[in-house]
Length: 216
Image (cartoon, rainbow, N blue to C red; front, side, top):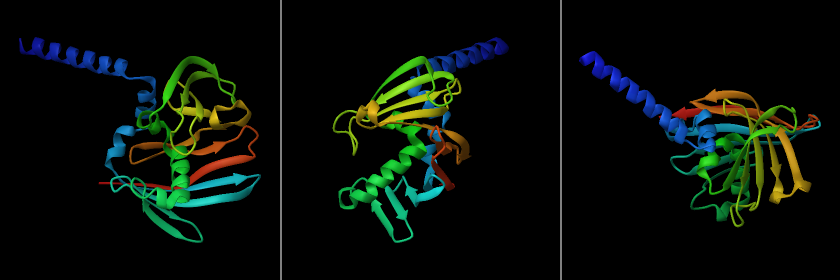
């Protein structure tokens, strides 16, 4: 009887886990594949945001993000600024714009569940750079959302729910579309981040260095 009861319990547990997986939306699965459940344990997240164009380093910004304190510190060759991005964003608008931009590239999969936006799932679509058949989620930010309302992102991913490419449409316009890869994934503190993004011709590279996660 005990063995039979244990068997029933295990079957029920498996069915429950299966139901939970089926109940998840596709954007939740993408966020989970990237380790969103571990973000709550992050005490400090450090990274350097870099942009290289035609072999020339145009931008390099070092960040220290303390999500539990709602603070971010930007370090450049010229200055260091620390601010609370919930209560002091308006006093540090330029720094806040940079913070939002840079951490979107770093943790965009998490914003799929953090942000107020609309999304549409396409089960089969052609990735713009590699030409592979992948799944696609089209994300649309509403008017009045953040610094760039109306932006649209088309993200392309495999069955592992890891993003491989995306297209950013500024203001939703095809005339201002920009495609880039998501590659060179690394895991830090349970968070999986793509450390390299390249344009189709390779003339543009946005990449992260010095990534470090401090947990409690």
